Image (cartoon, rainbow, N blue to C red; front, side, top):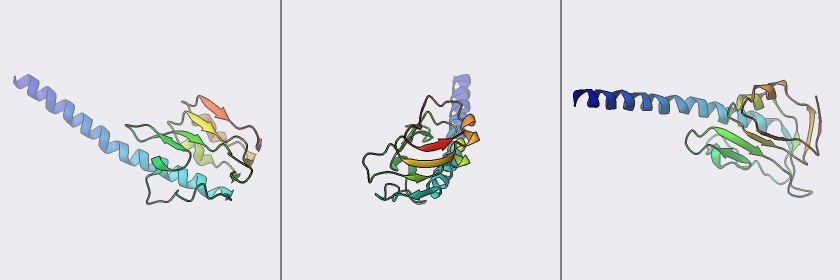
Length: 136
């Protein structure tokens, strides 16, 4: 019985440590997203208007988060119409979204070099860049 109680306390303590550490990591995802927003030079439909420091980044336009870890796992900025597009560059901070699995920015007006930090995205499964003016 004592061993069972000790095992329960040990497991509960390690679980709490995991949740405590998740918040700063998720905060880094939010900071990376805000740097991405800063690199957007045109947003005629105000798609990113809700991307504010005091709001829940998991509910932001185009952002998908893991339900449990709250890490960003998807970004989808596919242009929906002629007036609903984003223009700008992709910043290096895209590579800071360590859990990103899907990056879809098709048919927008992104230009410039594809950031080298995209190589850091070890879990990336879907990358759709067509319809932009990217190089690299």
